[in-house]
Image 1 (tube, rainbow, N blue to C red):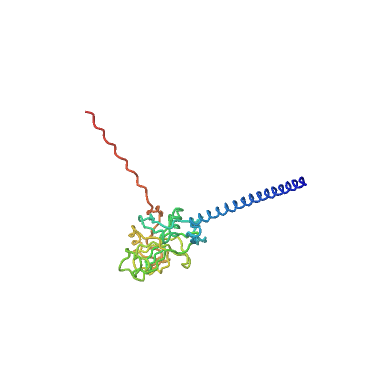
Image 2 (image 1 turned 60 degrees about the vertical axis):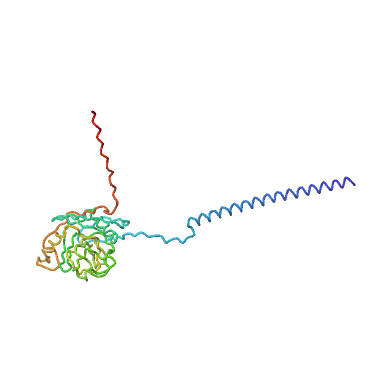
Length: 292
C-alpha cells in the first residue's frame, strides 16, 4: 500500500515538474515577444521624434520651378539659318556690358539681366556665334525715333519680356532717374533704350537690336528692353540725322538709313556685379641695415 502511495507521489511530482517546465518556456517566450515589441516601439518613438525635430511634419512649400527660356525654332526668311539654340538654363540676374563695334566707332551699353534674362542670353549666344558680324543698321523710323541694326534673322524666337508697365512721366514705384523731364508722358522708352525687335506680327522676339535715339518715342509697350546706351549715342544720332530713304532712294519717314552704319562685332562682358577677388598686396622687402 505504501509503495503505491509513493509511486503516485512520484508521478504527481513528475507531472508538476513538466507543468513548471512548460510554464517556464511559455514565460521565456512571452518575455522575448514583449522585449521585441518594446524594442520596436522604442525605435518607432525615436524615428518619430527625429522626424519631428527635423521638421518632417511641417507643411513643406511647393517645389520651386526655376525660370527657363523657351526657344522656338523657326525658318528665317532671306538669311542663312543659325544652327542650334541657346541654352534654356541661363543666368537670371546680374549686370553686363554690351560692346558694339561699328564702322563709326564703339557703342556701349549696360544690360540689366533680371527683367530680360532670355533676351540678354539670346544676344550673348548670337554674339558668340558671330551672328552680328558684318551686318548693317537696316531700318530707321523717324516717327518712332528708332534705329534697328543686325540685318539677319535668327533660326529661333522667344516670348517677350522686360516690357515696361508704366508710361514715362507717370508715377511709378521706381522712376528711372535717367528719363528726361521733357519726355512725352505717353512714351514707354526713353532715349538710349536698347530693345530687341519683334518678329512677324509682334508676338515674339527676334535678334535685331533697336536703339531709341530720342525721347518721346511713340512705340507701344510691346518690345523687350535689355538695357541702355552709355557711350556712342552720337553715332546713332548721326545716322538718324541723315534720315531714311525708301526703295527708290527718295527721302522717307521710315526706311533704310541714308547713311550706312555697319556692325563689325558684338561682345558681352561677364557679370559686372559679380564679386571679384582682390589680389593680395605683396609686402615690400625691408632694406637691411648697411654694415658699418
